[in-house]
Length: 292
Image (cartoon, rainbow, N blue to C red; front, side, top):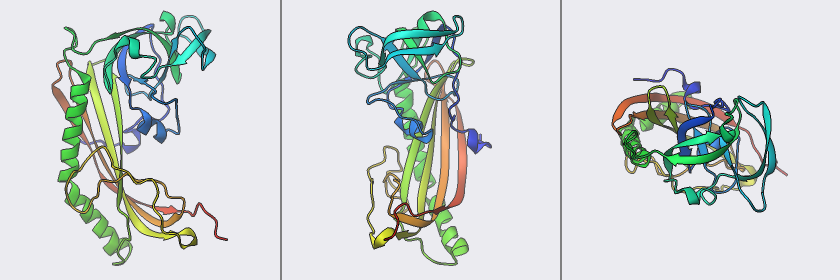
């Protein structure tokens, strides 16, 4: 199956309304998707995901000095309610509940049972891990690892097609002028739980970039290059490095994107695979550093 609406592949600040008790995914590595939405949270943050909504912050009511204090949150049954003594849900604050990582299926009480209107966050209580239970035999961490392996294999299989797309840009768009590199890659991941059909979904989207770049003040320096956590381990001329915005670099950039989504049922079986087809676009990068 193919995705036809690329813009809807990831949610963008779309938050779910939640009942007083809800099953969803705890995500211990939410940063990549939050960055796409222009959001950021505390270190070691853990977010909640359900029904293809954007990741939602979670807060715990705990004794001791509160880094957040009090928040007024919109509930479904009690209107706006003030919750005090709030701490962000992080790996540290959730440690007493033994939540598996990096993802886990968890039932929670939302805003002390009052539920939530569509909002970026809610107060959680009484989390109950469902992974590996009689009702939910699947283990999300295993499905997550399986999805990563499958996606790495897909990227490796597409390496020649990606190289060919860059070659076409060189020969057609830039009249045979070679792209100067460096050729880079960035992968984003998103996970969610579907309450309607009881499935765990993992989505990946990868962007490869190359271009005809210039450098402000003649300083050809590359910033922020680091190993990318998702393949391909081999294939073509695609080095496993993470794309980063270089404040010194500007010019014409070619972007090639593709992706995939994998859905797993309650037993852990892969039930559905959908592909985001390869697409090419061109971007004009403006200088971020002024010439003197």
